[in-house]
Image (cartoon, rainbow over all chains, first blue to last red; front, top):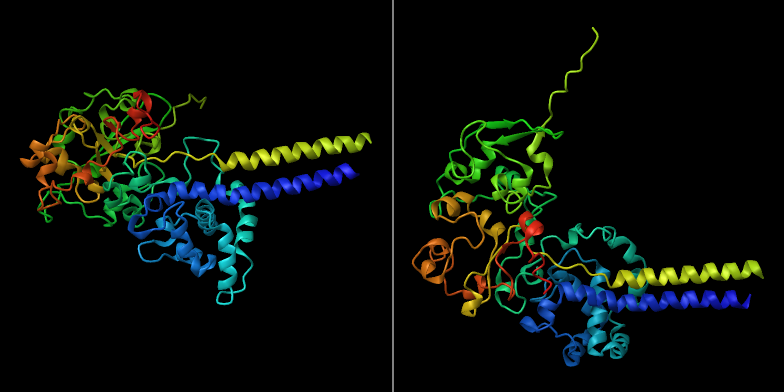
Length: 308
Length: 142
């Protein structure tokens, strides 16, 4: 009996240990992705990671105040650090990590007690964060088993987090983050996560047809070419319309496609290797994983010899 | 006593599992990925002591049709295939057709184009070809 009690205590201890680790550890994870861009170097007056004086100054308002500013934004600090996909608890965890790494933890509680009369007598935020982080891993890591699938929170990262822009260069911070443009555009499940054709047709963007003259309009040719496919996939319908909205005839003809029916051998192998349709599709235009966007015409059912 | 011990075993297994589950989930961070269609051009940049160029297709296609660059300005459909250098740009060719201070900002903003992570090879980031054949699949994991 005694051993069971001991075990229960152990499990409880394990839980609380993991939970308190989750607090700061998750905070570090969040911070490494979404906060370091500014808080590592102290960009535009941001309190630096590990700088005790910086964080001590912020904590004069109390933890609640710091959390509020991080959640709602203040001066150069955008709300949630400019990453609206983060949950409130992610932000609170990140703050816990910043305070922990700056060694302001103990002082935080002291100054919070001082600030409390002003703030609401809410339950201590530290405890709240702990309780919620215990549940979180189950929720946010649903698709983690598939390394090719990314949760929406990881789509369209800003330049300084995307892995090919150098976070140590100033360009990465001056360039427009994709999400800023994409939020108002038509959504798609692949590529940039933007349906560019729909976006254009709905007038959400007005890309120029001439580099300087914004009155010039394309000559759109509305002609569908159906290509019968040998395998089990539906036939391919190639729409000139959507292509001539963006491109000039000379972009494809005659170098990539000979403008004559039956003159072009096209295979998925060639496309995957960046030839034929693959010159654009799989690089810039929607990727080849969107099979049914091209293979869109159902074949007539094969004629089955019937007795009657 | 037998029942108790099996119970104890179950408990400890459960505790171990729960503990592992949480700690595992905490430290599995997935790498970041750049925008589909972003082109890195590193023909001459790093040799000349500059960061590689990152060309964001998404940014440009929201403002210009493909035709403007790929037909009017003569950009080939090939990453790094145009052999662009600063001389050509200053002469008004390729990027310099717009990046001249009139249509878009001019060439003195070096770091806006030369913003790539060092050692990133020329590529169309996230392209099918890159995923299938390139051995430089993950430039962000050096």
